[in-house]
Structures are given as C-alpha cells and as structure tokens.
Image 1: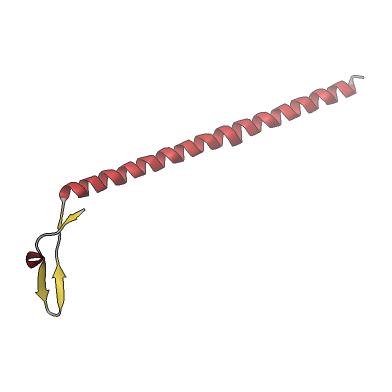
Image 2: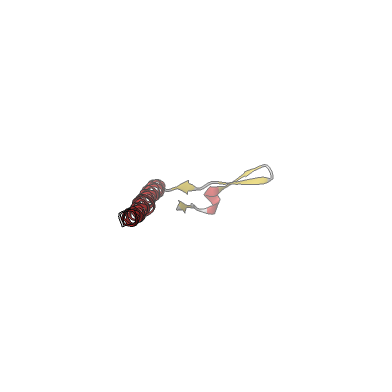
Length: 83
C-alpha cells in the first residue's frame, strides 16, 4: 500500500519529535478507490435483491394467501346460505 524509502531519507528531525514521511503509490490509491466503488455497487445490488425478495415473498405471496382464504370462506358461506 505505501512504499517507504531509505530511513535516512524518511526521518527528519523536527524538534524532539521525528517526522516520518512515506511515498504513497498512486496505483494503490486508484486500486483502493476502485475497490471502494466495487463494494458500493455490491452493497446496492444486495439491497436491491433484498427489496425484490421482500416484495415477492411478503407482499405478493401474503396477498395471494389472504385472497385464497377469503375465496374459500366466501364459497363456504355461499354454500351454507343456499342449502
């Protein structure tokens, strides 16, 4: 991720505290940025998949089950009234 040069070139004395410098590889920054974007895309894709599964499973199937229960109940009530 970071490339460090020779210690004599890196450490500069600034008072009592040494200052450590490092050269950051530009390719690794670009790779990190691409990796971050890839993670964001994967997260959005998973979120979209979760919403689709929610809609199919909880909305469509639940609504269909309620409609079937009402249809069977209505048919049963209709048959009881017409006897």
